[in-house]
Image (cartoon, rainbow, N blue to C red; front, side, top):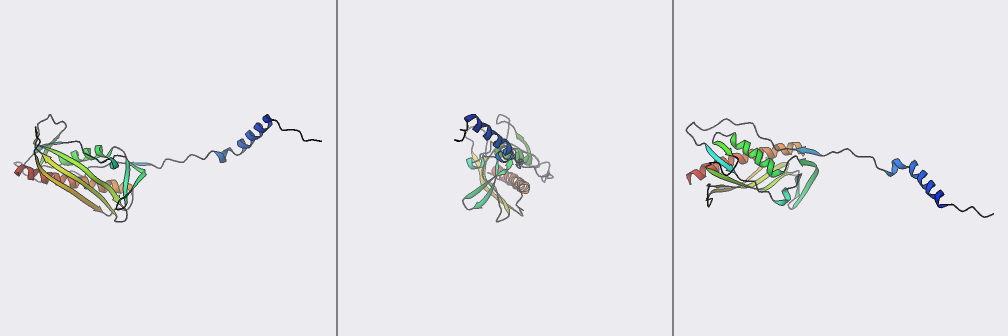
Length: 207
């Protein structure tokens, strides 16, 4: 007696039962989102170290320039001389240029030498500050947070004569490898940048 041929419908039903019985193995369980978001923060306001008759500059902060490899929101860790690891699980909560501009403005206005950081170039001001970011990262092997930026001070108005320029580099030691601490140590470096800008403003005034 010949075996009864299996119909197409029977094959489809059998396949359906098989998938139904093993569905929990076919569709992987969803994984929790482990991404964490961080911001640069302003250091505690420092007391004014100048007399009432001292300089009180009004400055304009130009848009911070950031190289393309730093424009993503993933935090960066230096692996080797030319190798960078982008930590997709640790991200900046805002664009790095926006965060740097915000904290730098707050840090400058917390110093007695700076009267105000104007919001538009149309407001009256004494100097213009240009910042170009070069490095903003952690280094696990060296256990440091590393920050480098070029700062230039210009006179306002047509022509924008440059009065001062400096490449600011700061390595903040003691990074324990956590991204929350990396954000804090890079914030400390931005505060150091604000100190350096105040020094350059004094140089520009004497130029």
